[in-house]
Every structure is written in structure tokens, then in C-alpha cells.
Image (cartoon, rainbow, N blue to C red; front, side):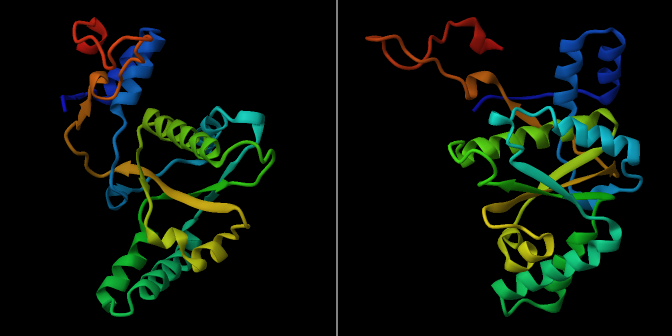
Length: 228
């Protein structure tokens, strides 16, 4: 697979915006986003105004039939101990031989990142003809919009999942209804450290062309598009 590094520092985002180049700004913003492990996300996190901007970004996601098939549950610091209990109990339910140290590590994950929220997808809300996969895609778009807004505001972010998302304790803690599923957690905060720019695939690695009738499948290697 061909990969290339996309080292786009945040100042280039500001530069593109200053030049009033919307396309360059969008490209720089997307290329600047990277996953920062929650344990490397520290205070300060977004303030109330910035949180509003991040959440409003989610509202621009495509949503077939305007079902609003997703919601977000903020986990304030005052509630982190409750989530920690769920993480610890979920580990013990999966592995009765888990050591106290392992349980402690599971519990500690609830206390990472200044801003933590759970992404919930509703498979039954509104029109039943809209497939669950469309609802999950819509949720993914909403989450990506939030991550990009967080990046534009200068914050690091991460998505995390894990087996605890399917535990009865977590479902009870967040009041998940029948048909709802916990998709992932979103963590946002100030990046204590960042990795070097990751290698990203080029379009030729993930794009092919539908062949005309009678033509051989695949793509024309001479097509200039694939040299991007």
C-alpha cells in the first residue's frame, strides 16, 4: 500500500483561513486532525462557548429523514467515579481473574481527558425504513464534524471503544433504551504531546472505477487521478 505523510501544522490552518481560501482551510484542517490518546489530553478543555461550537458542528451532519438517530451524553468530572465503577465491574464480569491492578487501570480510564462524552445511536427512532447502517454513518459524520471543530479550536481528540460499551452496567448508567447502542466515547482536551504526522493512504489505495459494460474491471494506471 502506498502511503504518504501529511505533516500539516495548525498554523497552516490559520494561514489558509487568513487567505480566505475555503478549500485550503478545509484540507489543512482535516489533515491536521490526529488521534491523541486520552491519557495525553489534559486541562484546559473546551469552555462553554467552545463546547457549544463543537456540539453545533454535529448538527450539520447528514441525517436521512431528519431522524436525529444519535445523541451525546456528557460525562462531567463529578460523574467520573460512577463511570469508573462501571468500567471496573465490566472487566470483572469478563475476567474474574483480573488483578486489582488491572481493575484499577480499567477504572482510571474514566478519569482521562477534560471533556468526555458517550456517542449513542438509536436504531428505532423515527422511520423504521431507514436502515441502522445509515444511522451509524450519520453518527460518524456528526462525530467527525465535532473532531474537526475541536481541531480548529486547537484541541486534541480521540475516539475510544471497548467491551465495556456492551455491558449492562454501562447501559443502565447512561439510561440506554431498547434499540439504542453505545457507539464510542469522544475525548477532547489540550494535547500534552503529539505524535509525528502519520502516514496516510493515497486515493489510489482506496478508489477504483466501475468498469463500463464489456470492459475489464479495475482502473487505468495512466489515469492522472491516481497519481494524486
